[in-house]
Image (cartoon, one colour):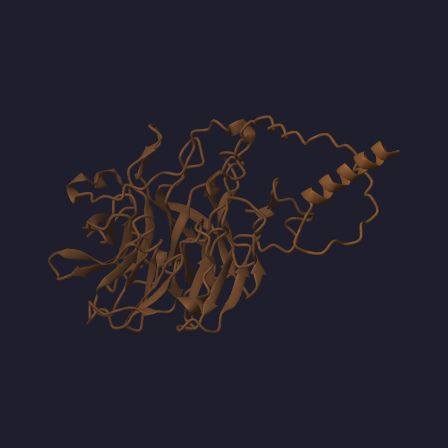
Length: 435
């Protein structure tokens, strides 16, 4: 008994000795139940290495949208512009064919990528570009034409003169150069905020024109070859007051208009439009359209040309309610500038006739366009007849081209200027009756 007590006391002393503190001893709590035995945590096994995720392929460029899988290896692609100066001596004008009595000559060179032109009261001509981002001023002193760059590094600028002021509109910018003919170094007024420009690049180069009503007409193309529109601000033609206020949408379903004019009799807007690509060599055709009333719908993206329902953007009754063209203008021909002739130099049969520059195809095995045609119709667009006017920019036998006619400018004497985007030149078309 004594031995057991002694042993217990020793144990107690040992416990007290090991747990001694400066505080007075506290009553002992009931002995805690032993914790269940848990195996020591093992380090987590490193996850097995995963195969690197394959990045999603980038979306195709807009011009490839709608290309069928069967044509994945097609070599058809947009034609890059030359964008360098071509001397007049290297322009083969002798290859061009015109009706009897007409003459074409090089009027100026040195303006690579030139597109639409607009003339000021002093006779200076202003022109925009697409790929180069430049705006040119071309002066004529009666003996020679010289050019200078007004502004560059813009994103696809187009121009129009109005009441002595030069309006420049790019993808993301709208500028006005007040009194530029008398003050060549004038700083621009930034009008971008007033116009609320959509940001997409594709089909967003803008042909500009002031109408008989004094309003500025501006197109905004579809941002794709073929697609359901991402927003409702594309595939339309708008008009604004000169300061950018009062915006109205006057036409919708317009895929990519690159030129328009106002009929001399009715003052109605007529415009060209490019058909979609990748539905074959022979369709859909480009269009010449007439806006008979505000708000008409011209079909894109579900209906093309004279009533072709789109196979990719499908819609029941796809062509119901669509305003059909005055005339189709050939598949993939890229009809650009449109001008109703009102001068007195040409024969009377050309009065109020539409001149149309067809820049030429890329989405076609055999080239189409690369010419100037006329369309003779009545003021309501009835009985249209299309006739070749200038041919020879392309060689059908070789399936090649050397020039790309784009836009017209009627001069005070009745001659027509014609820009060539490929060679950066302006040609003068005149007429003289044989005596």
